[in-house]
Image 1 (cartoon, rainbow, N blue to C red):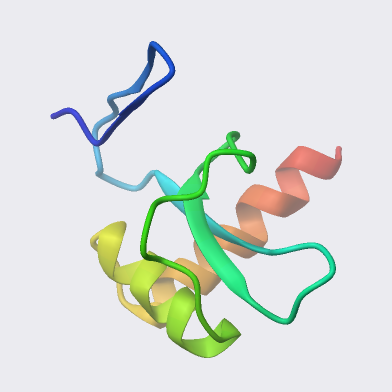
Image 2: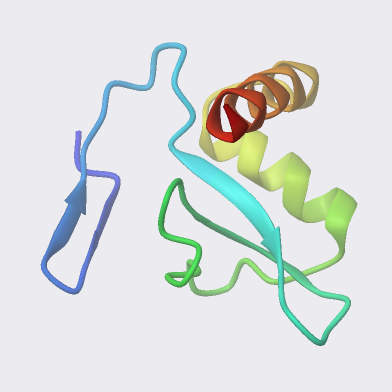
Amino acid sequence: MLLYQGSGRRLAQDCEGQMIFDASKQKGSSRYYIHPVGMADKPLPGTYGEKNRVLHNAAERNGMTYKEFMRARKGWRKGADS
């Protein structure tokens, strides 16, 4: 399943148990946006908004509940720090 295509890059992954989209804060602003994991410089068009709404939308795009998304996000970020 093709989920994102841009600048010649493709992010095609199996949704089961993996985060495909994440949310980040726009520098110098109070807005947040959704982007493919590992490509924070490639925001998805039309996904800017307040933090809570953006996180819920990112969870929905990943096919998870908000609670599952936040657990996966915490685990993914913890693993990235190591």
